[in-house]
Length: 217
Image (cartoon, one colour):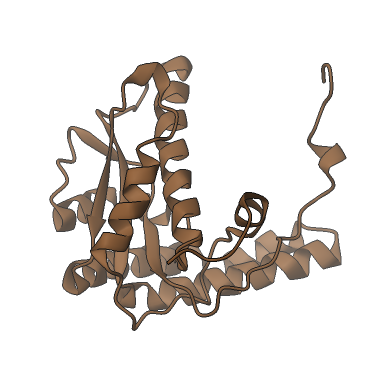
């Protein structure tokens, strides 16, 4: 069943969901298949479609992946790191918002081992040292497909979040999920779960004029 929302509402309210993931409710593989079917329609560079999605709804598998994520996140995001990063933001409003986001990220890390489903977007072949044009082609294709999956999940009551912290331990996750590490490069790790409530709002963003350049820079 799809949520009652317009395309604009879907695009404006597809959040990085961390605190409002339902870790107890199972995710029906058929629901994931619907999202995957739509993701296949995303634009793909040169019609190559040379990317893969590794999906798991196996609680034991997801738990092991989540333990890797939790360990890596807690090792990187220490209190000293948070204090130093916050000190570099002179705007108190922006600093408070960033710290709230990081608390949300900590909540996700602490609970990641309980996630009912994960999606790992991957690229065929490894891009280490590849030319910028090749990297842009490959990243651009898999990211668009993944974003389509995340949008499709939103209108089906599923929450997702793009994470990359685990990539410092990519080979461990490859071993857990049976991904051939030498030939397949992981791009991200997407937790997937039903959301607690569906009333997500627009995110706070900087003014459009800070980013948009008409008819030249």
